[in-house]
Length: 631
Ligand code: 6PG
Image (cartoon, rainbow, N blue to C red; front, side, top):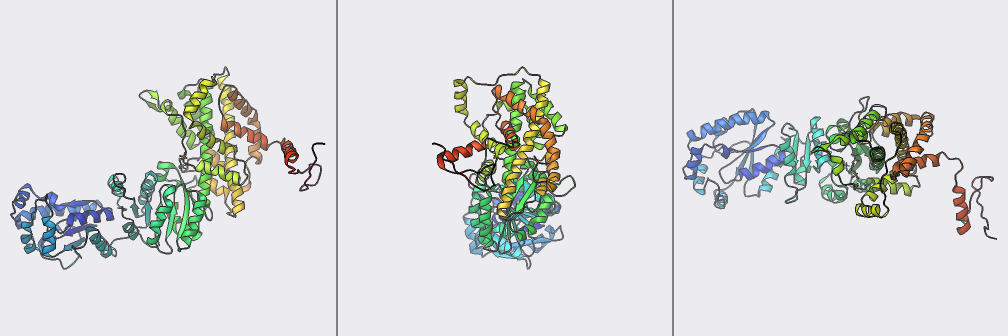
């Protein structure tokens, strides 16, 4: 679609044209930039242009208009004073004419305040004389401010411009990638990014310019204009920092209408999501708290999407989420309705807890191979590749192999990266929730603690000197150890997933969410960070069984690996390696598979000092006893 903003010099064509182009997500062109040097000279000498000066210029523009139309449209600022000129420009079937109308005095006032332009006030008279006001198009009074003019134009254009099906707020890495993913799949998208002087300026425009082949996106830095550009009921995806959601909702909600849907696709805390769901529903709006996993590449090409909240809202956006999600091995989208309230964000939070421990387990396996067995990074990468091909395939293992091969100036980049793991909170939140619900959370909480401990770099350096500690290489059979390590690693992964799913199971029961674990595993088989072959198995196992460790098929394997598991952990600890996730997984397995534990002593101690009472093995369950321990 071509839009031509026309009017005499000084009517504000360039300012209005630029703003309109921004709103429409189209490139802007100024016809003045195409005048011949002779015409520019004439005008700067105050000599009005004649028709013979203008005709070749208009013909050139007509050619460009044909090209711009093919490229997806454009906004052109051009005086186009006479009907004959407009006919020359009309090289495509339809042009939207926007005429900036104003009194002689208003325009003269504007021209007098304009210094740098070659069109001085002296030419205005000749322009007004030449002007033949169009009897068609949109006419706007130029005494309004440029913003008001654009608002007027938008209002009038609305019935002509197709509204966008979907809106995305926040054009950071994830927001931008999701917006482009939607657009690639044929959805018209309006994008909004706030304007922060000196920091975030013209971000939406930048996205449009960087993606010239994507024609169904519009960019905004005015929230009102963004909302106006959306078809009703509006569907708005927030891709902003979790801490900024409340403030964004405060400005967005007054612009929305009952029935509109707001999706929060960031890593928000699920209790905040439940609160926001209620807040929006009181205004007739639907709030769909949605976990999205897959990083930048996932967002652009197909993430795993975990929407929760009111079903009615979900149903309005389901088709879009299914369109952009990754596909599982049967071609089904890696997204499903998770459950009510904050369940989508809750499930994503647990996903991240599992992610943290999977990453830490790989780091521990790497450290044993590198520093205990003395293997070179290349050799470790080859070993991991063998695991990747041999049934242990996962996205995190795949990227670890790449990392172990990445060189910078001939040296391993990994060796130059500071060993302080950072975190944005999701793993820690999930550990805190596990404590709230009394669910053992061994591997996942250990992974969070390991990151926290790693962050104490300065203290660690001092302590290493004080304790004269460090890794000691082991004189073990490398091949045999690596084979045991593989078994320890796969045992750890099974336990880690078991623990994560156990937390989801408990919370689902307590909050009546009716989570479907086979479906959750299925939507995690592709697109997300913890996608793996194991996840494919879980999607099947959870169809019929509640727990992994009690599944007979897995129990057989776990039993056969247990000795190797204990050997690896013991050797590693002996040689100075902290193995928080591997060792806590082993502890979990041992604790879980111990029929008679020393917890009876704990009960006795509690009763001893606090008369907390205990149950007995030799009496009916549920009966409590107290003993006077000291005579
Ligand atoms: C995902 C990730 C992502 C997470 C980053 C960073 O599923 O795509 O989990 O959501 O934000 O991995 O998390 P940390 O900074 O806490 O490591």
